[in-house]
Each structure stands twice: as C-alpha cells, then as structure tokens.
Amino acid sequence: MTDRRNFLKASLAAPALVAAGGASAATNDSIQLGTPCVISTWAFGVPANKGAWAVLSKGGRALDAVEAGVRIPEADLKLHTVGRAGYPDRDGHVTLDASIMDEFGNTGAVAAMENIAHPISVARRVMEKTQHVLLAGDGATQFAIEQGFPREELLTPESRAAWKEWLKTSKYKPGASNLGTPGGARNHDTIGMLALDAHGNLSGACTTSGMAWKVRGRVGDSPIIGAGLYVDNEVGGATSTGVGEEVIRNVGSFLVVELMRQGLSPQAACKAAVERILKRKPETKNIQVGFLALNKKGQAGAWAIQKGFSFALCDKIKQDRLEPGQAFFKAT
Image (cartoon, rainbow, N blue to C red):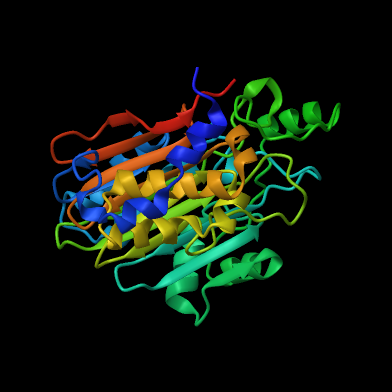
C-alpha cells in the first residue's frame, strides 16, 4: 500500500502543472456543455438548475438565472444547510450568507444576516443599490427591510428540535464522514451556481446558512468574493462548498479562475486548488472542501478532498444531470 505521505508529496505539485504548460495538462477531463448552461453544487442543485434554466432557455441573462436558481433551495424547508430552514448557531440564531457576481465584475454580498429568507436577492440589491460589496449582521437585515424584504422567523420547528438535541452534548467537530451534525447529517452543503447564457456571459451565486452550531458571528467563505465565489467573464467562474475557513485561507475560487486563466481545464484547476489546500495544511484531509468551475467554453469540472461531493449540470440536452465529483480520499 502506497504511503499516504509520499502520495501527497508526489501529487501536490500543482505549480508543476502550470509550469509545464497548463493548456496541455488535462484538457479533456472536463464535461462539455452546450450554451446556455448552468451548473451547481450537490443534488439539490438539480431543482435549482431547473429554476435557472427557466430563465436561460428564454434567452435570459445569466445573472437573473443564478438568482432565480438558488432561491429554490433557499426556500426549501427540508434543506438545513441553505436558507430559511438552515440549522442555527449554538445560540439558536439562524444566520444566512450569500454572494452574487455578474459578467461585468459587479458583486454584492450579505453575511450573518438574520430574519430574511432570501439572502441572494438581498446580495443583488447590495450590488445594484449601494456602493458597497458586503453588508453584515444587523446592518444587512436593516438594509433588506428598507428594500422591502419581509422580516421573518427563520428557525423552523424541525431546526429548533435539532438544535435542542445538539444542546444535550454540545459537541462540535466537523469531520469528513459525519460533517459535524447529529446522526451524520450534512453540515455545510452550500449551494454554489454558475451560469453561461446564450450571449456568452457568465454569472455566479452562492448562498448558505453556514455551519450548524457555529460560534455566533462566524462567517464562512460563501459571502466572500474570491473565496466562495468568483467570476471573470474572460475566463470562467468558480464556487466552493465545505469547510469555508480553508477556502478563505486559500482564496479558493479566485485561485481556480486564475489557474483556468493560465490554461488549466476547469477540472484540473479545481484539482490543483484542492491540492493547494492539502499541501499547505495536510490535516485538512479529515474535512471536506470541494470546488466547481465553468469556463467560457461551457466546460465544467469539479474536485474535492473527500468522495461524496456531487454537482448538477443543465443545458438544452438534459436538465437533471447529476455527476459525482472526483476526490482524493474516501471518508472513514
């Protein structure tokens, strides 16, 4: 059996990929989609993509598509990692994060926002109605209310019951297999979405309720432009899912886009970004981080630390395609 340390040493040579000429490194490993198209993280990306496709199929703008798409999981009361039914922090507060980015490089985001059900739409208002990129906490909530968004109680009975159960032990240790929640339920399955419209323009969106039982005030990568989401209309876009702290430390989505700029395919770029995380901090092999990317040619790819990450793809040929993401390890 190959020694894992030697394996990592041999495989984490991401700079060598670029030095050797990224264009020749793994050009056919990504999935070719038609134009327009949309991709997103996890199985709940399938219905989200259909929401985006309703816009794209009519010649709509990618920005409108990604907002419409991710609003679907934000509203899903059965989904506890995104939107209004998200699990709360350890003090029982549901806080939401989101970011959005268009083909012109315009961006908007909200972080640690409470009592507003659709953070992605508030993020777009931040982009379009203010001179700022990111609003946080009470200020984000105040802005949303001023913009006409209704104030709502987001802690659902099911999420409250799960929080009460967690309080019995108050254990918090996100890992590779149970991802930190009671009964092995998933903890940090962000919805990240990237779309290429019929005009050849890209946009992206990312929204989450963050880690369950997090320290109050914790903000992950999702609302951080360059970490949880980045779009360059000349090159492509990328988004992430998993333990956001490690994505932030490596400015992960920006890294993926820059690797594509240097010639790597979307999948090779995602792989190299995961390798960077593992190389800089080998203990991250015990958690999950995944990247998803789409380039200007409509090629999509993904890579993760742990097996189990999946991503959804949609174009005019098929609207409900789900693919397993490649990974370095199998969770134990």
